[in-house]
Length: 158
Image 1 (cartoon, rainbow, N blue to C red):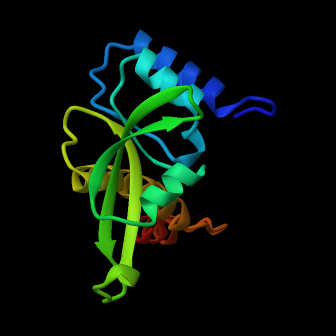
Image 2: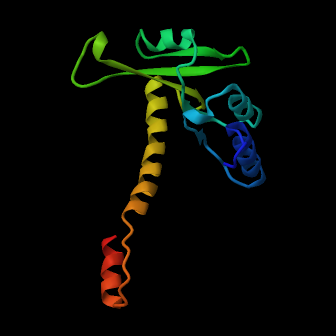
Image 3: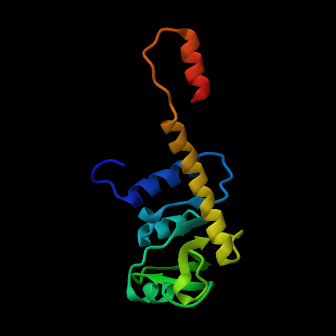
């Protein structure tokens, strides 16, 4: 991203690039930064399946995420775009009552997502990809040694 560029500008550029390539894109997985009406409209206009976590903007979505069990709802974001939201409820920290429930909301419009658990499971794949890149960068070994054997050992270990 360049200074002054919005997330919707970046997404529009990315989707145009995808449209120009001969790829069969199954879905676009985005983070919370892309949760806005402009980005959701772009995804619908380009006809891409998508999954992204929702942001608790507004009283209506806050109420939905503070009560109830796993379900699918239709949500209206700022009166500009309506989309399906999957709310997945999981128990946390060994507690099994209303106070132990964590509710995760996902904006998801994809043919392979039928349940809130599907939305969470598919979105969790994104973290594995990001983690592998982070770990790869952290495990690089640096040395100023000219010894080829030591450099090879450092490479293999990293």
